Image 1 (cartoon, one colour):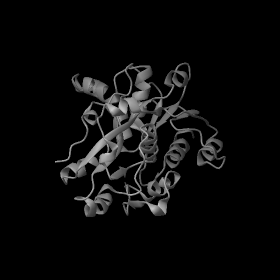
Image 2: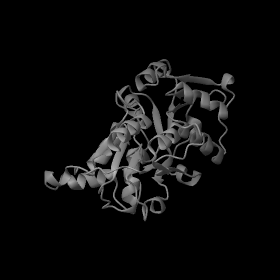
Image 3: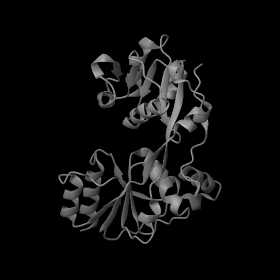
Image 4: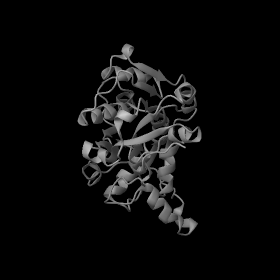
Length: 293
């Protein structure tokens, strides 16, 4: 059976300063159920909104249209950032890059850090290396590092893990696969590889850490905070493990982000994607139109 590296099995830790959202949720689960339930937030007029993403570069961003339409102030700040594993730390995983003739890539970050570590390790990637990508967009992104037509690049037809497994099936017995991953993010591909007995290893090449959260949170007053990743919750707790929601309206993009917020007792009033709001901009638009009458 395929085995991932031992390092990949370590429990994720985003910040040493504070417990993660998962840890807080586990601690609260031992208390009476009344204490774990998210408190209902008395919503007031929302005027100042913190968006946990980088500021859009294009002035045509729908966020700016939203700002003008509802006369609100948007502050953009990426709650998390990626910290690379240097070659010194990578060597501790005892992974020999030369032993792998195929790499599975599930994000642009994975692409960036795979070629970064190869450069740091002074490892010349073979022209026979095969690249298996979860989406066509990631496959095309490889052109930043390789001569696309001279390499062997494959991708899932529909962007799903099942679609990727269909592509991989032909090479199951001939390839040894390497998957670049984050230290504290579970990927959806490894379980399928284990189930189907592929020969592979996870290479931890980067970690997710809070991004200057004290500066953005302390002293600032926001009526709403919009998160796009469960790690955003951990980033907030890294500043204050007992951070209270108060009158703040939380928005969460995706089920995992919404669950992370609710697991630590925060009520989520703005949710996306949903049928009537496929994007967070659409969800915010609907909420502001209704709430700020």
